[in-house]
Length: 250
Image 1 (cartoon, rainbow, N blue to C red):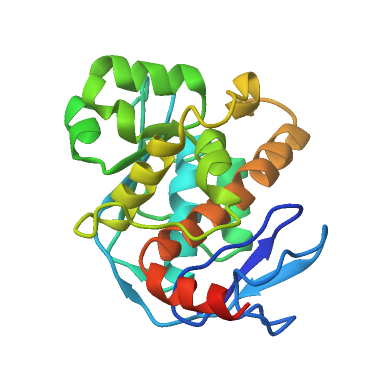
Image 2: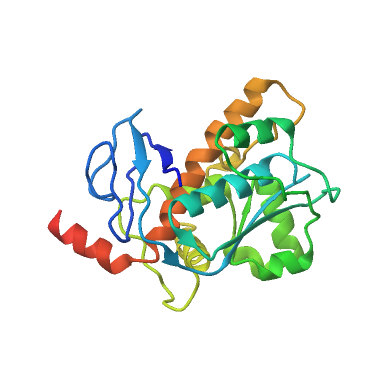
């Protein structure tokens, strides 16, 4: 299995888990802040026996949410994060469609499987069942919450979630020891809401569908690093004790 490549810039990388090295530098994650432009490699580490579900949502379920689902699933697989059900759906999707050709080309270049994917329409049951719901835009987030107000504590845009947990410089602590990793990330993010100012439109990921190639490249370049940090957050909430031990020696 190929290691996942990580492109981090100004944020700290925090991994509260079993040993997982930055192969190019030899340091445990969480003990250093990579400089801008450094290319980091997440080495395969022992699998986490996790459970829970993540649901990515956009409008048509052909570009943004399929990209997020399939790329995040690959990151979980490469990072040894097992047992998380990763799916996607669209608020206005026409069921049965394949992802956008630009998405398929990006996935193919990275040997990420996609043969079984077809679009599906978001249902109320999808919202009820998901431990963590991640949308591409604030409008989509608000529409999900309007359909199920109880989902407000576990529904975020991807960029909002990244602001709340993705660039953390302190350990992510599981607030409920019995909940799944996705539910734990949602719980931490929810409790941090209100501690920072809203980013407004900066929390949105625009839809590149039907636009120039450069629009797709810009979208993928924005989304993928946030998914990498989300995968690290999933690991962080699974092994807080070992991270705290590492921090005490730092």
